[in-house]
Structures are given as C-alpha cells and as structure tokens.
Image (tube, rainbow, N blue to C red):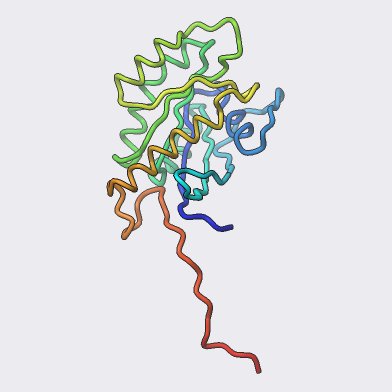
Length: 199
C-alpha cells in the first residue's frame, strides 16, 4: 500500500460511549447494534488524503473499563492523535473527560493531538449540549465535533480534522521527521536490489 505518512491514533473514553462503533463506521461504513464491549484493545485502519498527501491511519480502539486501563495505557505513548469520546445522552461520560485528559497527559507524548467527540447526536434525549462540549474543548485546547456512529454523521470528518492537525504539525516542523516521532512515520520508498541478477 502506497502512502506518504502513517499516523497512529487511539480512541479513548468511558465504556459504552460508542468508540468501537465509531471505528467500524469509519473503516467499514457500517453500524452494529449488537457490538460487544471491547476487551483490551481492538484495531482498525484506513487511508485518507489530506493536502494531496496519502495518509495511512492505524487506529487502536481501547476498552473503557477501569479493569483494562493498565493494558490501554501502553498504547498512549505511541500515538500521534487521540479521539476522546463521550455520549451526549450520558452526563457521567462527559464528567469523566477530565480524568481521561489527565490519563492522557500522564501517559501520552506531549505533542499528541486530541479531538473531543460527542457521539450519539442522532438521539433526542441528549443531556449534554453542544455548547457544553465546545466550551470544554476550548478550555483544554482540543478540537471538537459531534457525531453519530449510527447514521455516520461527521464520523469521517472527526478523523479528518485530527489528521489535518497532525499533518500541520509535520509541515510546521513540530514533528522531527528525521527521528522517530511518536505515532508518525514517513513512508520510505523501496529501493530495488540491483546487486542480484538472474542466472
């Protein structure tokens, strides 16, 4: 697969907010109503185009339960970006955001980009307003978007917004591409071995 960059992302947030459904909608364009709770970590990938650059995304969907937290912490360090997800119909998942940010600050690299995602905006009985989500994001310097993993509303846009910000950091020199930047890899062109010949 030919691409210019590879970015590694993690999807974090409380259990049941729709992290796995977001990933499935983004990678496969489908929604499952019977999705089991994630055990440990799940993986998905997709290639997108940003500023005429082909970018391959490797996305790690982490379990939200406290019992798996020690496993998921290991994935913070190698991530260039994170999608921090809450359920707009469940205030407790919104109230947990500060804890998830603290977890990220303790375990991720300082340059990580984060987008706050308010999921399930297709449901009528929301309890967290768009204004509240936007205010929290502005307070903590995060990107912000609302999505529906069920209808697909703004799901791809959430990943694209995050990818654009990571790419901008590369363009501005914030990521040192001469070294191994956390969660970002430049695709080196393969060179043919001319020393071998047919006999």
